[in-house]
Length: 231
Figure (cartoon, one colour):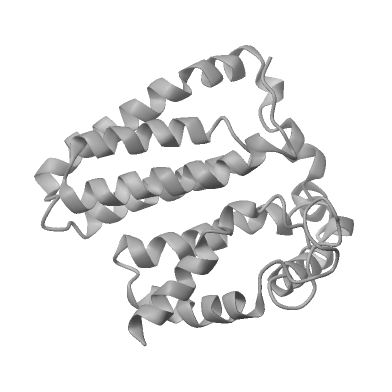
């Protein structure tokens, strides 16, 4: 059987594996190394076995690959990009295959939990986006003002990160925008923007929900470090 844990190792596994996959991929691009490309792909494949928000992190990996094609570094010229991307994609595909076969045989298990908690369908049908807007505001405030009230996820009601971290992350967003053509700038912004959707679009009465968008947590110290790097 396939078990997707809401609380526990498989949930936190996503955060560790996304950091590992990104580290391998960025190092591989920096060095033009196919072994690191394969390692990044394998880590990305394992990532898909973790929490249900993991496809967002995998999308960020492919975004970094596309960035390397659009603005190729000296270590990975365009003529070498297809081989690098091919090794990455092949490794990811091979690792993901067992789970992919499970989804082919049991298509109802893919996205079922997302459908249960999503506000998207209801908001689209009714045309009332008020709850989505309120949820977005609450999730943006959970870093510095009022955090998740669920004691399984957070100290109830407290900001989910220290004020220093959230402040530096806000300042670091500007530094990241200036480096948007580099993975160091693109990745934290894409992770933060993508992962927070997992909280915004689900069950308004739970908002803010810090567990579903937990994949953005590496982006916060990353953004803070970018700001400190330019000071």
